[in-house]
Image (cartoon, helix red, strand yellow):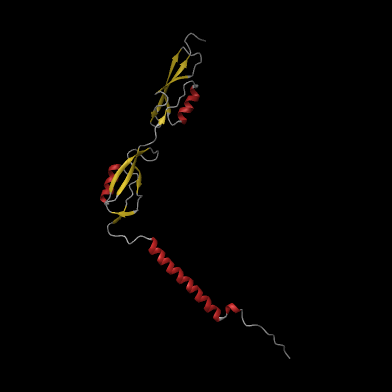
Amino acid sequence: MRTRRHTQPGFAPFRGTAWRRFGRDIGLVALTFAVGYVISSYWIAPGPLTSEDHAIPRVLGLPVDAARTALTTAGFRSRIEGERPSAGVPRGAILWQDPPPSMVVPANATVELVQSAGPAPVTVPDVIGFALPAARKVIEAAGARVGRVDTVRGGDPEPGVVIATRPPPGNGRPRGSAVGLVVSGRDGGGP
């Protein structure tokens, strides 16, 4: 005779009633999430946009007159809040705007603009007493370039030393402009 093996029916969670309870629980979680999402969206999000609301156009990089025209055409007012130096934006162009581009605000709102003053000026470094090669490196590192170099003979026993700059140290110059140097030379009678 054959022996029968007794096996238990399938694993309990995979029976029909367990699946129904699992489906019901997932449905309740999904419903709770959906209701919470709708309530939080209504609570946090602003009301619907009216036809009087507009998106602010991007005027960054435009000349001041063109930026003001673009804002006026879109239904906004503009106010210049000064200027700031910028190496990347040319002088007279818009460097910054507030509110930022694409923000939706009511019509006739004021947009604050800051225009570029161009690259920041370079301060002429004090290289008096430096040897000419060292003075040249310092001036170039400051963002200027060495212009005319004049030699004055006599007075100073050591030749090739900077005794003056044109313009004097501490003055501002446009970036890349020339700085003249006056360098000591030898007397004509020396060896």
